[in-house]
Length: 365
Ligand code: NAD
Ligand code: ZN
Image (cartoon, rainbow, N blue to C red; front, side, top):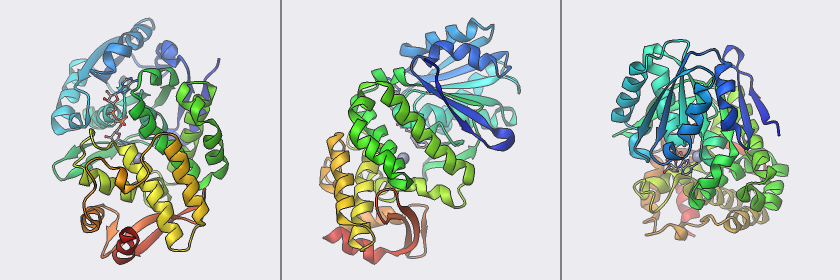
């Protein structure tokens, strides 16, 4: 069946996100339609063996000159060394201004290959073929690219919008369940930000989303629509785009406390706990009905996600350690934190000037 098209109307940088099962088979024709003569595919050693041949064959059938670069899987690849490897591979493949870099992988590959595309020859075009749920609903959309530095995650990067996003939902069939659940936390987040109807839909259909029916395509497409809408309003994160950080102030702190050790916590798990904390914190401030906070927790728990600080393997340290980790977040100004809070499900808002003391009091209980 025809893919779902989600337009991202960013003026001369406008592009489409296509969502559907089996899209990778038609990727060649769709990518060739962008007018490139060569494509440098960048992938990792989990995804490459599964899907790179199919993608390369589909592109070669359109007469494109192809190269494939396979990097080690994992966050450590989003590094200066990883960037150097991708840039050199792209130059080696004689990718010119009109040609393409194709990121085939999760958020690590998308962020890294996108950043390489932003800087090689001062910018070549790139296509995202996201292969994790997280990358299909979040990182492949919006043009944030980059790598990590010793000073922190994602601190070196660029805004560089893709020319096309191909989200083949069949690729998620091979994704480990834990990664699937982690991405699902971001899907739920979109409902919690401003779409209570979508949250209710998730409560009713999450099993089908995991199983891979047409509901999966719908959830991915709806998430992309939600993210695209925010990105179009605020491409460079000067305002509204911060809403996408719902659950992330707590979530990032938990990732920091667990030393970004994916054996303990992956990003989406931190976000799941963070979403629950953001709602419980909102309830404790009297902003949001307790029943809404409970509903958020019940749903994430049903989907197999952690929801409480006590769910972090190995624990998450003291309240002070957690606050310290939060204070390192780039969203801190003075002694106050900027939180995304909620008046209810689908009624989130940016709350600057939350005193560390009130967070401390909440976490103590
Ligand atoms: P990831 O890219 O590390 O992928 C997770 C794991 O799944 C890896 O081991 C990978 O090899 C494997 N994998 C990927 N696709 C698979 C498939 N189809 N079948 C089997 N295994 C597969 O992680 P991620 O969660 O996709 O992305 C996390 C990254 O995204 C972080 O670096 C984060 O900073 C970034 N991110 C960026 C943005 C943005 O706006 N640019 C937004 C959110 C997250
Ligand atoms: Zn996130």
